[in-house]
Length: 364
Image 1: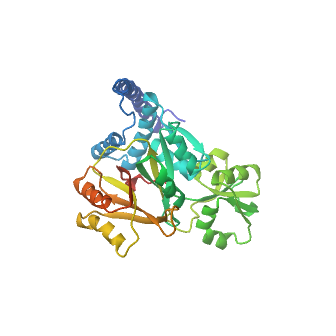
Image 2 (image 1 turned 90 degrees about the vertical axis):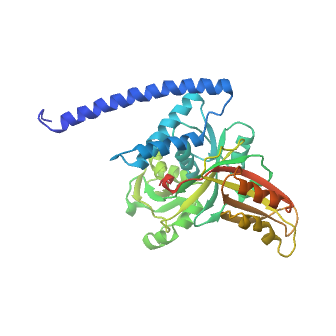
Image 3 (image 1 turned 90 degrees about the horizontal axis):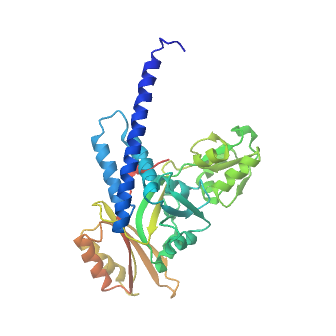
């Protein structure tokens, strides 16, 4: 490259800026360590999502561009994640193995410096958090095309854990193989759910190729890495971990395929001003009972964003209702409505108040 190349002085400037950024990151890290000592002496929580949100909001408001706001969120998520690991490593359990969508949701919320603990079932996620072996758990609660995850709802009935937050993850399925050549594919492996979510694309583009269901998208990627005639439907992270090439991106039939995950913890979350509250309750079996249960929320003008019913499993034809609403338990109208409901319900459990996930937080 010629010494007169105009790129040379620009790259030198970039190098100088990178060195200043590196120095500032270490200055920040040293201050974080001091904060950690104070939190430890005060027995305060190391992880405060309200503070994290305030950092994102403040920086995006100050940002003059051209660096995009969403990139600021991603960059500082990793800075905060690494900083928290200096204070106290955060342990998060999720439905594994690694590179599943539960893992991606965990990384989206907590960053790559988290201590991730993959387990074999949603029940084990609850167990790890209840026993204190994990600080948080990440569990799927609903998908925009498949509906609610009933097993997660059922586990909340007897669990003492609280909902600490929510994550919205754009679910993108990629067809991938060792060679990256579609003409070499003889079998396709994946979990049953991604196969169902890509049914139209598969029927249109690879109608003669056998589909084989396996335990997870990660297992599918692992098998594709071992056999050049096998393709997997899995995440982009899976392709990176197993050295696969993506044949076709985003083969899901519904472009707006979003899965909502809940963050569970032994502790509740602080009020942020943009929160949700989730509850479960059961009612007496009589005409108009559900209407009477929901009336306090209407009278208090509370926005209910979800209502689901599940069999109680304790008595035939007895149901437990799950409700999400906008607002925090500390809000007067939320407390008033729940108190009125409590006076009439056979069973009522407050699952927690927690920060709402923002649409702009969703990653592919």
